[in-house]
Image: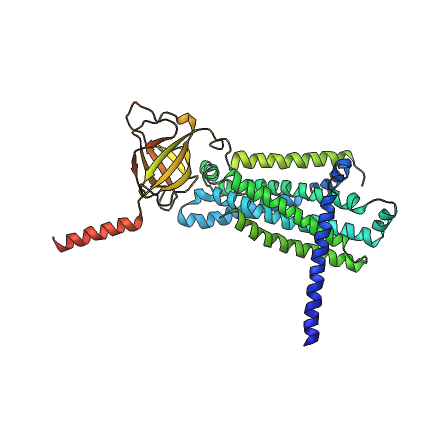
Length: 259
Length: 157
């Protein structure tokens, strides 16, 4: 019985310790954000790796999600004779939830895992201690550019995802199923607001998700046990933890933003 | 990793694609161009009951969208709801005896304010109030009245 309690205690202490280390890590990174301006080219390379190389998967997923929304939305709405509202359904669900959330989940799988593996392997092959030996701060040289690149790329990717998704919904609804084109766009414009739906939904949510996913990915990499097994576990944890964090945060943000 | 020209072009393409997508969302999806700006003039109207009218509900004249509801308040002295609407400056000439009524778009659609232009020569000023108003139709009240009239008729044929 006592052993059981001790196990629970040890586990929770370890969790809290990791949380604390993660927060300290984030604060340290934020304190060094100024480094960004002295070497912007490092960030450019990371935007390439994190953002540009995720473009294809984001575009393709966006198109398919939009087309599925068009099909399913049409099937439901046509029973009520309100298939003109298809534009609203597609635009609202993409802007408010699906766009930022799915992009963040894909981003965690595509870019987050790569970041963790990269940093973790650098640690396992003792490149990070080597940097320290040379008097280069690894947080500044390695982490800050990647963190900023994640925060820059996520909103751009989410916006692209949403826009392509809406075009996909348009293609399915108007092109294949014969919803009236004018009604599709005008209903959408009537019910989608720039501030709440696009500003809060796409932009704010995706910036928050980008910051959280990249933070988790970089921390897991930096904190990984420097063995091949440790790196693989850290990569798994990145995907699992950041997906959970995105879904939970999405609930909180939705509750705060849309009453 | 060394920075190559491809990378620079790629990042440039990525960033401009993102901004273009945002622009498309703003213009094509949210229709920033109409009523997104703060100009236009305010018109007030007092209703006994506004039903399901909300802020940002449409204001229409002859079925054409001319403005939006910007604020809904309750006048606790007159016991009536106060609805503030912002009308697009293109539709400036609204006669003072214009009637405002709350209609429902479609059977299950949402409610909007309909303005029926009056015949007066005088034009409503900024912040002016529409005197002739008609409340939203409340389904329960209508049923009540219908049932009441029915029973009254049944009792004294």
